Amino acid sequence: SRSVARRVLPWPLEINSDRLLRRIRELGLIGRNSATGGITRTGFSATDREGRDYLINEARVAGLVSRVDAAGNILIGMADGQGQRPTLVMGSHIDTVVNGGRLDGAYGVLAALEVLQVCAESDFHGSCELMAVAFANEEGALFPQPFFGSMVVSGRLADLPAEPQDHHGHSLREPLKQVGGDLATLDGAVWPAGSVAAYLELHIEQGPVLEHGGHQIGVVDAITGRCILTVEIHGTAAHAGTTPMDARHDAVTAACRVVLAVESLSRDRQVCRVSTVGRIDVHPNSPNTIAGVVRLTADLRDTDSKRLSEAETAIRDTMASLAEQTGTEITVVSRVRSAPVSTSAELRTSIRQSAAELGFDHITLPSGAGHDAQMVAGVAPIAMIFVPSRAGVSHCPEEETDADHLMAGAQVLLRTAIHIAEL
Ligand code: GLV
Ligand code: MN
Ligand code: MN
Ligand code: MN
Image 1 (cartoon, rainbow, N blue to C red):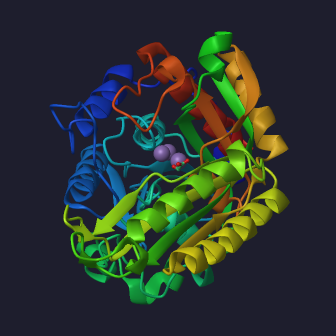
Image 2: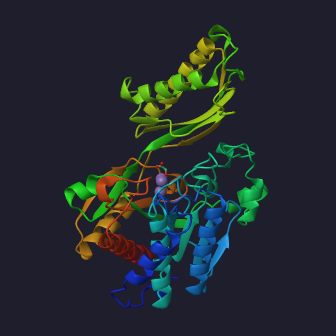
């Protein structure tokens, strides 16, 4: 309540850098492949569960309380939290891509945990409840429903398949239960309109802009829109030696045409900004069998909603004619769409003010990567804080950020949270 918020703060509240860096290191060992150095904690996998257990245990040891909602999101609050509204939510995700880095997502979650712990330790209670969140399956690397957890909290249930499946056809039902979620009660996880005062996501930039300019902090003004399609190409499996070339319905060669068409959308036709096929499964994947089925993903991105729609229509049209030409059946079996969004101008101002007070150099930039924040934007004002990525790379083992930059971002998150919660 407001009277409590007027208490004089024990400034400066400080991020405990040893603690935050230790947690980044420890979580970064879970799902790590020692040969490549890459981390694989795909959403709802066994390593993801290990990471989730780690986070929940760290929160418990810190004297905080966790719960898991029906979507499998981990929500961490103060032990004496009253569940009073409104809530200031901070977080990101701890699932990863296949062979990714240790910071994408995890940094924002662990920094949010650290902010909560610092506030709890200094007995800071503002006008908002503080909450840290680890959203389930942001990457969609195993289950092709990226942003799963943040879509659920923002009430986009109708945009999710009734029976989500992974790339191998396994239902989400059991894996979701194993982490404490429940597909049957997802609507109970939706955040009521007005209940969240603000959502802050701290994240590595995953691109080269901050490092090139020598800036410590990025204030995100807009997040790219995405359209993610999972496509199945059904041909006819047959003998590679006996089937004449003109009697084939080869799913692999049809898939190759689809792959090039997706690339061409951006490279040649410039219908949308970037477009990628990053995953291909071939069945039966046997050297002397013409492939019967190929499943692939197409990831289309643009900051303009209309262009994104045009790109989706264009690739669907192209796939229809490629099906004709190749004698295969090409169908979109899963589709996730995230609209391009703008961040809150008010929250951006608050972040800039915090960065300035801390003496950090900052610029404003858009995000070409997708983030849970863009889903949460449907139910709450959002903002994002970026820190530099070494060599601008991400979604690979080389993803890294200097410790002082990690600390700067966490300090800005802490200070911004307090500014907001103090109001
Ligand atoms: C999602 O994490 C993306 O930007 O690829
Ligand atoms: Mn990512
Ligand atoms: Mn991320
Ligand atoms: Mn992302």
